[in-house]
Image (tube, rainbow, N blue to C red; front, side, top):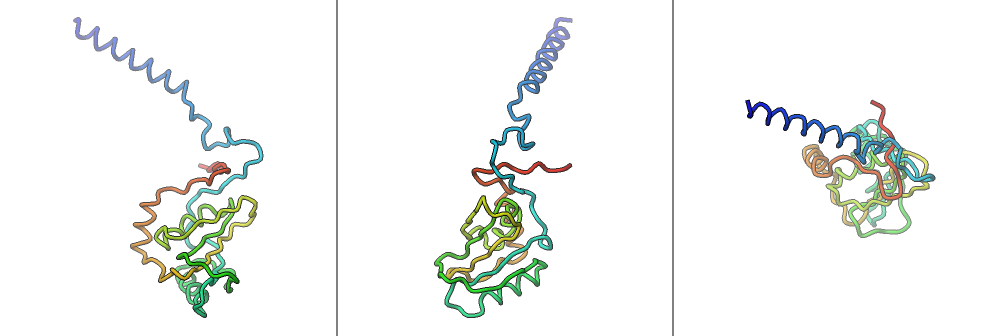
Amino acid sequence: MRALVVVGLLAVVALVFVVVAIVKDSQRGAGANGGCPEGWPLADVALRERKDVKLNVLNATDRPGLAREVADEFRNRQFQVKKVADEKKQIDRVAVLRYGPKGVGSAHLLRAYFLDNAHQDFDAERDDDTVDVVLGSGFQQLATTTEVNQSLGDLGAPRAPDGTCPMPVDR
């Protein structure tokens, strides 16, 4: 009989702890724009499918035709290539991804195509959802499908950049 009383008492205590934890949860409004400071842009952190990603491919190397070649590879992988051009200033990196709050999810996917070796250049003032892919002298090739999938797993879910709030996700 004493054992039943002790087990019943433990169950009641556990229930009280659960109720208190739920009531005092400090993350209740997280992600629902409840704690977003006024004036901060909303970042679209939904991971995009390839067919929904818009990009510009820019060549910042001394290799002629590189932007067109990589743009064709992206088109073959069902990306929407909007512009292909040369960049005035050469860069020594593998690539630079330039994007704004509406392009966070797209840029996250593109990071995987460069095995997370592309420098991210986030501009909170940019108002389109296109990502500029600036190819640098360190670029060799885009990742294979298997490498992209592994890289996406390593990267985890897209996160809102500093100074932004995640856009609420409709469920």
